[in-house]
Image 1 (tube, rainbow, N blue to C red):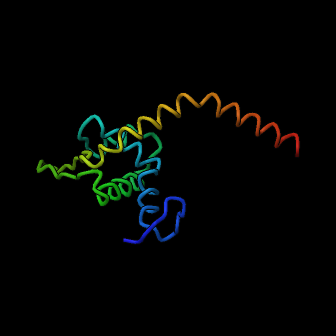
Image 2 (cartoon, helix red, strand yellow):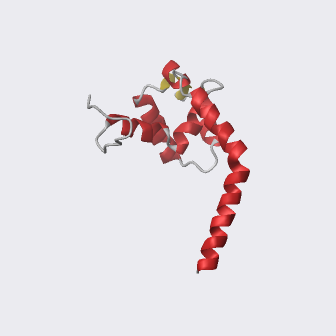
Image 3 (cartoon, rainbow, N blue to C red):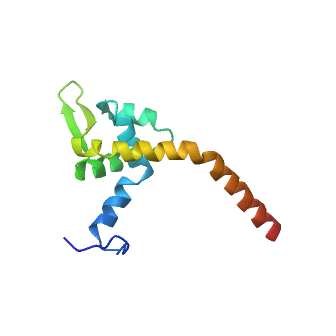
Length: 125
């Protein structure tokens, strides 16, 4: 594995690709949805307003490839597929919860900063 310094952010550093994949908005939301237990594809999709079938499929495949989600085929008629979070995926729950809590707590300050920025841009135009 390539040596990657903490502040280097080299384009070819494997940690950069993994970070990109787990910090993706759909990945974070899928792992949050699966925190409550295994779910089928359509149940996940219903909880993620705006996600397309293609985007969710790609996200679940990335998460499965990275060992964060497990895909299980249920031999019913018709065949069903269920996804669950793995023990490795569960290790992401504390930082995701902290990030969500920060988002909710900081939203008023962020909205205020956005308004101030937009006003400065409008005044400069």
